Image 1 (cartoon, one colour):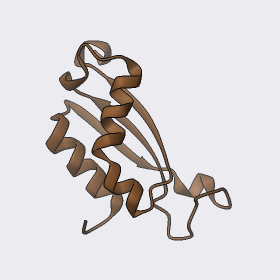
Image 2 (cartoon, one colour):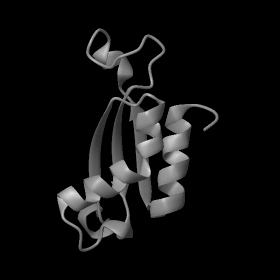
Image 3 (cartoon, one colour):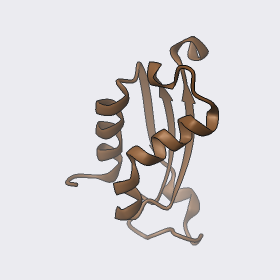
Length: 92
């Protein structure tokens, strides 16, 4: 991985899920002093992903899919991930 973790997350999800909407927010500053937080940030993210890839999947299956795609990010220092995963029909 090169560049910021935020950019890598966005590129990975864009390539694998072809989302119609994607918002990746670094909330690390809100967790300063908490477990897993680092001074340089990029440890806590909030995602809002809208993709047809979630059709027919339960909420747990959607989260597992996203977490699996971001396994390398967890290895790189991602500590916490809040995920909102919706289908286009649910978002519209």
